[in-house]
Image (cartoon, rainbow, N blue to C red):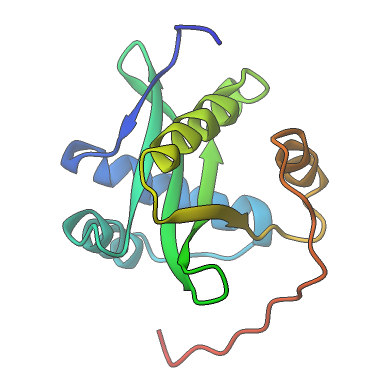
Length: 154
């Protein structure tokens, strides 16, 4: 892979960028308008509480080009952690330049160093065929599961 991309864990300096990426992602994929201050607090909360997950970023020449958030699910069936890949965003000018591939390789390497991690999961909008193709190319398989949700005023 190209050495153009530096992939690293997100830091405090990345909070505003990550929050803006999430707001943009929600609009691009679901036409949902998120409140930047709320998302900023959410990003900050995750960075301050690594037991909930972490962000990774890919940067080039000091500019953050893309990110991935990972959160954890305990699987009693596997007696291990499943890492949920979420909040995947790559700035338009960096798309189709292997940014997600570099982020995914970073996650695979990090997961291989943690014996509790048993796999990855990702959910994707049904109409987001580009993302589905990308995940398939990374070796991920579509499942038969459907996701249901209920939120409590947040």
